[in-house]
Length: 307
Image 1 (cartoon, helix red, strand yellow):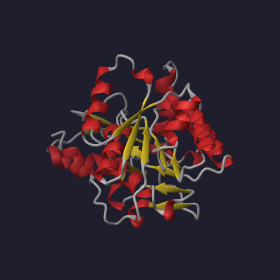
Image 2 (tube, helix red, strand yellow; image 1 turned 90 degrees about the vertical axis):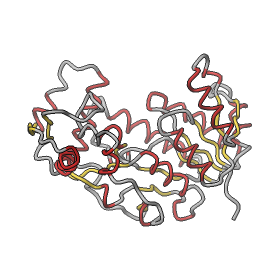
Image 3 (cartoon, helix red, strand yellow; image 1 turned 45 degrees about the horizontal axis):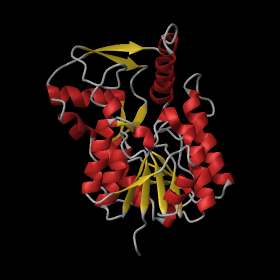
Image 4 (tube, one colour; image 1 turned 30 degrees about the horizontal axis):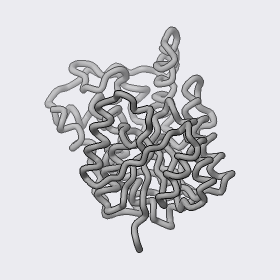
């Protein structure tokens, strides 16, 4: 079967650039939406040009120009959006363009985190992330657009080397805050593996109109297990400071909205176990079972680069 032509929207972003690389690596004819809003952002432009040098095709179109979006969409078979969280609702314009074009075999909206369909109870103000993702889902489904949702849970760079500490991306030196008893299971994913699974799903009929959950068994770890792995690698022993749930939530007071959102998300992940506290139903598939040939990066290997 001929591989689909893929348009990546948000191809210069943190996960988008990885999706572009994965698409090229898997032999897809890969297009990247180049928006005029790039302006004087030289880093993004240079990244786009590097992708072009490796075979990607750049399509100029604007989210503010419906005709240009429709024209871009008509050139491909699959659209993968990796638009950042601050711009999630721009995808409604993309949905309208896909609906009018009428040729798209699969649309993957920008999700790649915790499954928003399971977060109806999420805390304010952080629930806006899940609410907006669900708004996009409703628009997709109301337009009868073939789709796949990717639930990738926790990107390793933001949660693993720092042992899931807030406000830092680096390993702690002496002390580590432990959420509750530290034994709630969480799913951590190497970002390149997320991109690989994403691209593998786009032509897979088993993933059509379903949520693909990234749950490689070796990457389902508690915070306590994560800390132990780092201590073994580094040879250091960290002082553990347990943080009860109510104390952690109380820390929101006086914070700006961005940090309040982070506290809420961390609470759902590390106290409630929202990435692991459910079974995958008929509306979902588990990626490592669909694609056993993918060799996921272990979190131990991920942490080694920080030694």
